[in-house]
Image 1 (cartoon, rainbow, N blue to C red):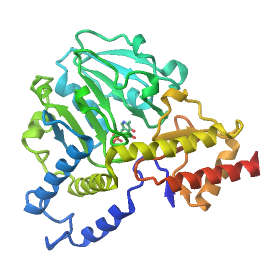
Image 2: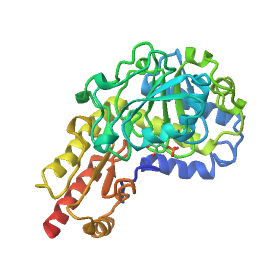
Image 3: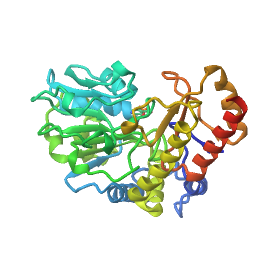
Length: 362
Ligand code: PLP
């Protein structure tokens, strides 16, 4: 089946097949990938290669450190405040959807300024940069590069991407769009992503952070929550999620072999143009309500003319080999997540099914 799940999401078949073999025996290690020590030579080499490949794929400059913390993006949302904002210090948040709102919930002992929010119009737009009320003394400005549920993404048509935040470092949640196009890492203070969309499996995250920011005192925190300690300990202060790290490395290598972020940029254009074209060309049968200049290329929410048709749409889709299309409970309707591992053929199959469904129910 073509899997349109928002995350955990589809992985490339070649990665899964290799994982199947490595689950039984990893190279000549004499044991499964999930059985070998994270301190042993095989795993240390794997971890070194995963970082080197990620640096190559995303073009991460040397003055940026890369961490592979256990856990998801929400954990990083809590940790960034602890690591980079002093107690009571101001932090600026731009909220462009559900995950921006979730990020706010992770903040304690900081002075939160919501510099802009798209909530008033149902997160169908991103407030223009000129309207943001940024603080001069903020520790950082936080944005969500792509909102996985609301289908809203900072796109060049919106204006300047990434937005200019002057001397205050820009922190961005790239969980659902990392590696979908080339980005200029040097424009960000910190980039984080849960892996379970474009980077492979759930259970591990990636944090890319400008090294000088790690010198900030932050707030009192346990050693295990300290990014500086994690960097010193090579993200292995305790036993890391080795299986997840392995799959992440394999997925990154697959993306390099496929042509890197420039190629995924091209494919994302083709796939999202095809799907939005089908929605907009349906004469109003299918609806996507996001302003065109900020429509996500990764997550496409859409609605049928009557929610009573949703069940029939989903069961017919399943029969046609199209799964994971049910929208998030926050929005309802449908959502097609078309990350890097989704081939153009999958989106074409979805479009064909949508047109056929409309003929029967329109
Ligand atoms: N940020 C974004 C943009 C997401 O899409 C998600 C999950 O889908 C999260 C944060 C939360 O990630 P996690 O479940 O890994 O904590």
